[in-house]
Amino acid sequence: MTNDKPKRIPYGKQNWEDVRLLNYYYVDKTRFIPEIEAANDYFFFIRPRRFGKSLLMNMLRQYYDVRKAPLFERLFGDLWIGQHPTESHNQYLVLYLNFSMITGGLDQYEESMNNYCRRHISSFIEKYTDLLPPGSLDGLAAQLTARDMLDYVSSQADKTGQQIYLFIDEYDHFTNDILADPAIEHAYKSQTHGTGALRQFFNVVKGSSDSAIKRAFITGVSPVTMDDLTSGFNIGTNYTMHRKFNAMVGFTEKEVREMLNYYRQHFTFKHSTDELIEIMKPWYDNYCFSEECLDESPLYNSDMVLYFLYNYIDGEGCIPKNMLDANIRTDYNKLRMLIRKDRGFEHDASIIQSIVETGGITAALKDHFPSESLTDPDNFVSLLYYFGMLTIAGSSMDGIQFRIPNQVVREQMYGYLTQTYRDNELSVDDYLRGKLMVSMARDGDWQPYFEFIADTLQRYSSNRDKQKGEFYVHGFTLAMTCLQKFYLPISEQDAGVKSLKGQEVSGGYADIYMQPRLDNYPELAHSYLLELKYLPSSATDADVQTARQTAIAQLTRYAQGINIAGTKGNTQLHRLILVWRGMELAIAEEF
Image 1 (cartoon, rainbow, N blue to C red):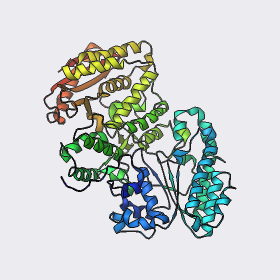
Image 2: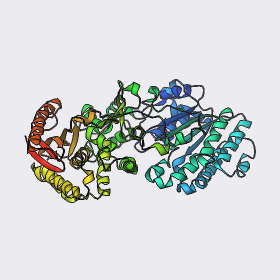
Image 3: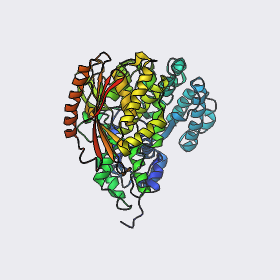
């Protein structure tokens, strides 16, 4: 333990100046500044929510803002860029716009956008009033639209030889509206096509490229809106998947280790750094955004790591019982509209069901696609990737191999499925399910739990026969089994990838090791290794027995392939065989 005052944990912080001046820990990402400067002047960058984009943008704003020059040494002196400054630091008038702050529905979008831009461009002129022509603020009052305001302030800056660096955060904020409600597609297109307000705004950005707006840095969570704006703004370059910027946000394992080693000098840690990495990794790690970086360290979601560390220290060395940040849960809940775009959910071709079943999928990764083409399978998988629901795992002749990155995302996938089952009239008694899971974890009484699942499906099948199918049965079983607090589900299929265009089944099974979360629930007495098999309803008893024998062999192989002995503690391991024949649980047996 040292006597130095420890740095504060920047959980939830987006103001980079506060991070630096108020003694917060900062993972130095300033080494990417020269790479950004060497790139196209109009830089387009997509990352999932809660991944550090806003803090990165705030840092860049402080670096380039002419008004921040007196603070350069305090803000950057001990960082990489402070030792290797570029000539462009503190050389720009910085105009920052956050489109998530534009409130109201799409029908009122233009008015809201005009009001928002008037406020912020007015503040911009007031901030740099001595660097702009006299009367600039009065002249702004005569501009009626966001397009005209941006054009006006750009021309004013050009008159005095000033250069503007334009930052736009969450440029695609209202894309979620059209994903959730196809009925407003027309209103969306009215803003992004033709004479629409957003389209015209980006026309000005493009037109100002030979005047005052010399650079732009634009972020969002998907390329959908930018594709719809392409002819209005076709001078930007999408660096989302560029190898140089793979780790520009998020944390590498090296960066996480350095952070943990720093804080253990100041606070009570009951676990070694290796132990904490082993706990966090399956929940927060395994993101890769560039195919060319597959051999490099995968990335941790920075918000999730800071959430864990904050609660670990606050809990005096106890692992947080809830590994999922409630703020991230809220953000991901907004993405439930993805199910509505998942064509074929009521049949066997559901993409999300297939991903949950096999752990991954192969598709072509699209760097742009219009809103009306979201349901194209390759586009839909690409959208899941941009939202952080899938990560790049490899490549083949068929396309990019994607997989679910970690348990946080897997929980969201299960959550989507269970909600959609309910939307399709499959009611689940969550209270009873919770009681049965407690008995399963505490007493080893596992049969009533799976009988409950079978009974639910049996009652449902009589009402909705068209829902029968392997992906449906397995998806429901996995969701009901894995969406609980006592176990970390480890799947053999995590690394497996299923073809998107071919609907073949990857072996027809999904092994799950229900690893007990003993750090949180030391009283857990039972752990489970599951082998799921599905046969069509027409299968004979002999077919069922053949599937049972195959399951036994696979259980034995799987048990030898993962670290069960090192993770099950003193729990009793149950190896279970579950063979479905249609919606009938034909075999539920402990081997």
